[in-house]
Image 1 (cartoon, rainbow, N blue to C red):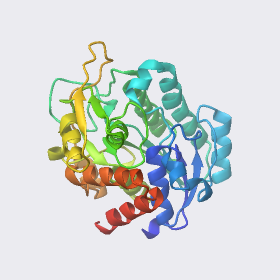
Image 2: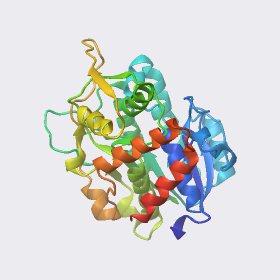
Image 3: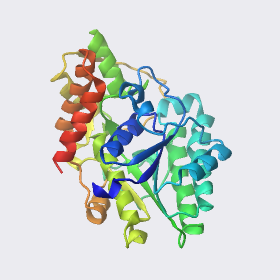
Image 4: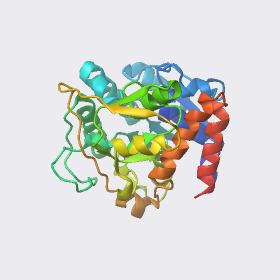
Length: 349
């Protein structure tokens, strides 16, 4: 914990779901948190629900603008950069593919190009996704050395982010003051995600109104995990990048659940309904855009090199997520609930 006290941390995408949780964790650890992101895109938005705007150095800017990115980095001079800003939705990427490519690839390149001219020692985590891997007809879990790919524009753009990051790491950062790693996270669930076309927000909206939840792919398998698990993984990775052996961890890392906790969409909905009464039905979409049927992650590298492991299993992740949404739906304080879950999670280390 003491590592983060007084650290200057730049979080891109701090107004988003994961960025808001991450900012709250960093504040609890005593960091000076600086943001770079667009205004929140959802209403409600976790960023506003937990009053982050008044508790961090909130800065609105577009990572697609290289001038904005460089000026923000120069002003902050961060010890750690956690780059989460992205276009994060598969179905949105089919509707606006260029937005995914420019935000994810060019935006990341702008961050790295500004860092190339940095003269301050800095650990940098570029967050991507489990979907960077080339889909195959196998249930064996993806490990970090597997071939990158991407069918939909979102997945392909995130694979492109990995390639851009690796190029900068080898070309410009091997002997510089920058230590760079990428983090490939599974499907994060947790309170405060209000995105469209994402399973848990859709579930919360439907169950709170007594509507029937419509699910598209009940048999699809995903590496579900509570959002706190990968976020703590990112922080452990950043700590390792600052250590004396940082070159060994200037690489890519998967952060996901144990293999037994890779579950289907149907299992996620069914488990949620044990905590929050609701109904669901299968929505057939013959012309729906392609999405991978099965995704499994191998997390052994993070376990062995970082000493990280998921703390909350599938059942706990679902129960804590439902608890957050029900608490807020019944008039409870989102900030209090968010902080209490962080405290509980940290105490179980």
